Picture (tube, rainbow over the protein chains, first blue to last red):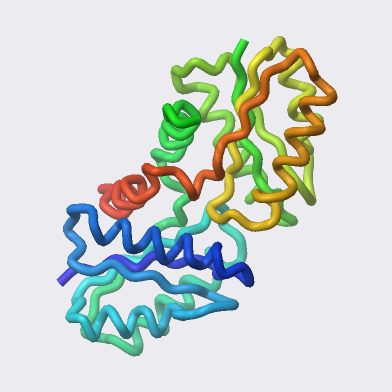
Length: 122
Length: 122
């Protein structure tokens, strides 16, 4: 069973964390190959990434795709996330993990930005 | 003449700032209604937003769309950006400005995330 985990930094501002949780909920409602979609944070709030991974495994995930919801490749993306991946792999050796590039590195980002810039409601 | 200004936070890490500059360059190469596309930062590096706005006006921009390249609506998005918009409007009363929602609030974000999660190179 394939799962997707959205990984965000976490904020002191509850509404920012809620944005991430809401996004994961919206993702869950879209048709995709992911049976289960979760979210986890690095800092400042919960669920932390290891707990979010554990929850997906409990739900039956055998393949977990980790998507860093970051625009820039700072220390969190370049150092913390590979470390979290290694920890997750060690904790769940039977699960296949796939750590994607951070969202800002997406090849489609320029097109997405133009889509947003030209969206009707703007 | 329509212009688009990508607004990012700015980082101490030069490569993160370069990611934003590169993104603006890629955007410039895509066909769109924007004759000119620039980028500006809030903190830590240059060009700062007022200078980036000024450069676009010098290039002939009469309509400038401001796109906050942020995933979360923190203080920068909710307070700094409206203030920067007001300053830009005061400095360039002949120009029409349009401040968009931050990128993370895009209605299409869930679809974009799935596109990234399912991209072939991942």
